[in-house]
Length: 81
Ligand SMILES: [Zn+2]
Image (tube, rainbow, N blue to C red; front, top):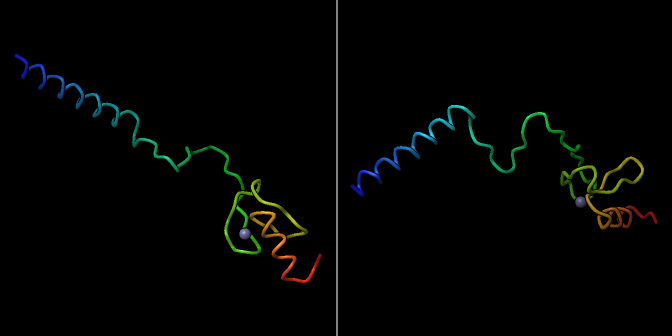
């Protein structure tokens, strides 16, 4: 009797998962944002070339930097203060 219940439970879980996949499509995975959500603009750091969200870095004149450190580094390399 215990085995029958176990088999029924497994079948119920399998059916539930099957229905969920049929109804909802592929499950959302971390790192993938749902469609329609606004993405921050990704800008390229003029110092290291890394793309960073606009809000997470700093702007100087027409350049973008991923961090204040890289702005300082850029200014140091280019002889500006
Ligand atoms: Zn950088």
